[in-house]
Image 1 (tube, one colour):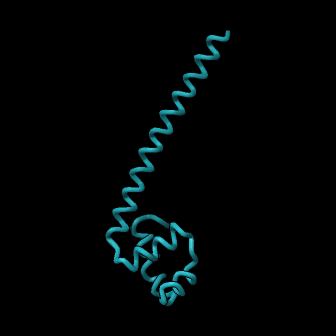
Image 2: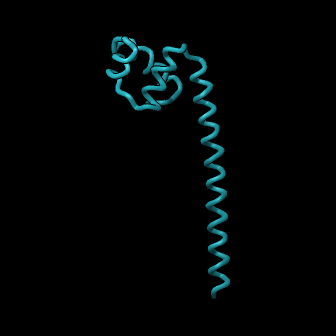
Image 3: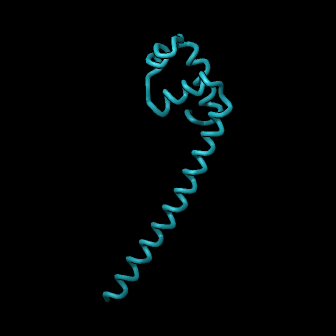
Length: 88
């Protein structure tokens, strides 16, 4: 009957809204976690992380831009990222 169809549609919409609310809360938590992690870094390392993760720049690009060698970035970026489970 049409009433059951509408009721089912409303239930599905409400369930989806609840899912989106939970997802939003989780993403807000993750954002705060990342901001807290970034605040523990030096300004240079924070810039490296920002360029790599947010601007998706290559390690070579970052090294050139900041006048660093690739090894400095690998020795600082990768251990930090692994420590905070940003990469596997």
